[in-house]
Image (tube, rainbow, N blue to C red; front, top):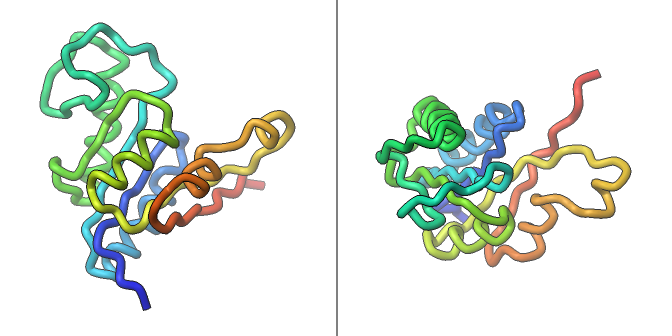
Length: 148
């Protein structure tokens, strides 16, 4: 059986991150793997900063939206005991940034949450599907069911 060494947990701050994170943490423990975490900023405008697309979590920013996103990532990472050197906050298109980081960090399993899609969302696709088709490593889509 394949033994994963580096697992990348992707989070979108949808409210289901803890459910997906617990599954990622359990797999990391089972395989004695290193857990990494990534949030891609695709829904807030990018301020004019010297950071480029990778946002250092140790830097302070006057940009309130960015600080809120950084704080959320730090909070989840702290709960999972993920070292700061394995936390990633990147501006860009999620599928592209996830697959590029996976290559750079020698990730062998990407974990994404997969939401139910209806209507136009089915036709337009999802990040989980796009990552599955473009990743060079295994991808685990954790199905997130709506309550009810």
